[in-house]
Image 1 (cartoon, rainbow, N blue to C red):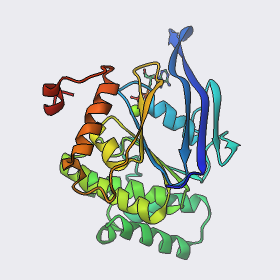
Image 2 (cartoon, rainbow, N blue to C red):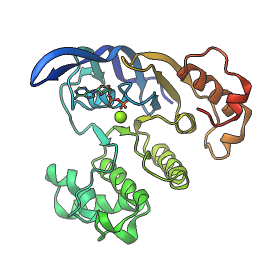
Image 3 (tube, rainbow, N blue to C red):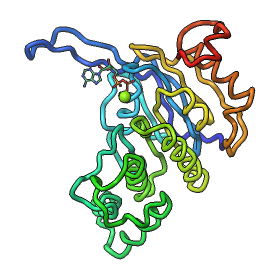
Amino acid sequence: MQNNVKISVSGLRKDFLLKTDNKITGQFTALNDINFDIYESEFISVLGPSGCGKSTLLDILAGLSAQSAGTVCIDGEAVVGPDSKRGIVMQGYALFPWRTVRKNVEYGLELQKVPKNMRREISEKYINLVGLEKFVNYRPNELSGGMKQRVAIARALAYDPQILLMDEPFGALDAQTREVLQDELLNIWSTTQKTIVFVTHSIDEAIYLSDRVVVLSPAPGEIKRIFPINLRRPRNGVRMTMEYMQLFRDITAALHDVSVLPSQEANGSGI
Ligand SMILES: Nc1ncnc2c1ncn2[C@@H]1O[C@H](COP(=O)(O)OP(=O)(O)O)[C@@H](O)[C@H]1O
Ligand SMILES: [Mg+2]
């Protein structure tokens, strides 16, 4: 991990207006006073309970939603809207059902008016990277959930963004497929050196993947703590280590706002 700041978030707040019968009846603070930096080529996860503002934060980083206060800077410049520096992998797959795998992956390149032969070359590279070379002409409804997620990742990578923003990308997958894709994502990350901001509500997933884990509190989302994850890489087999289990306990305790976790809870699955 290098120490150049890639994304700087400062004093970020997001309020949503509450409406009843089309009248504004109040406001709701989804994120409050969020301050942190993300380093170049870092893999950082944002972890928190449902409704704590994770997707809202990612949407603001993507430039898809405007904050109510504070700033987000990328390479020192304020974010004012989406651009091709940032690729997004949404919750769910958000693929075009009528397009083949190849055409889904080429979508962003078409928008950028990349010539056809170059589009073909680039899409092939990323389709191979996610292991879907035998399925280039399939449509989404002919693919499993894990394969659709691979297409979404290849599509985001295809226009070579510096930053990949991922919103619970593996949330809908079975445990085994999820672990396979976690390892594939780590491989892609280590070969491409992208900066990855990964939203999840899985403590295990956050620890397994990340250089650091940002723990948010329930609404209004505020940063409770940031945990550095100094586990060895590659991470295969790391789940069995004492260091991993200690981190799991500490992060669980932070998430649930208890200073010391009773040992039977730490050993069980009651989280
Ligand atoms: N467009 C919106 N209008 C009003 N409230 C919203 C809107 N989007 C999100 N919220 C609220 O903001 C909070 C955070 O939402 P979200 O960022 O989706 O949480 P998470 O991704 O952590 O589950 C939730 O209480 C949600 O209901
Ligand atoms: Mg969400």
